[in-house]
Image (cartoon, rainbow, N blue to C red; front, top):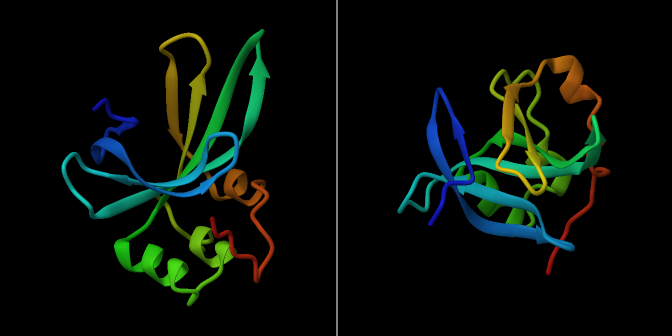
Length: 126
């Protein structure tokens, strides 16, 4: 199994439970290899094009098994699952199509605030 992303402060992360799927994974857990402990969530924020290169972007958000369980059991909604006020360890991952080029950078609070999150009270269930 190949890693999904490597974050310098954390190491290699692997795709875990897929929480939302629509033409591909849109929200999924990231774990260490051979672990079920959720460390982050990857939330798809869109497909983009820059300098004639297409890529998809994800917001990488700190998480835990409890947070995912709370969502799956209906205790928190989709907005609260993704919204972590004042969190400093949120990253943006740009994965370029057709080439092995993945870029990751820490997001500023200003750039996080520009991401359109789901409305309060929304739940996505398969």
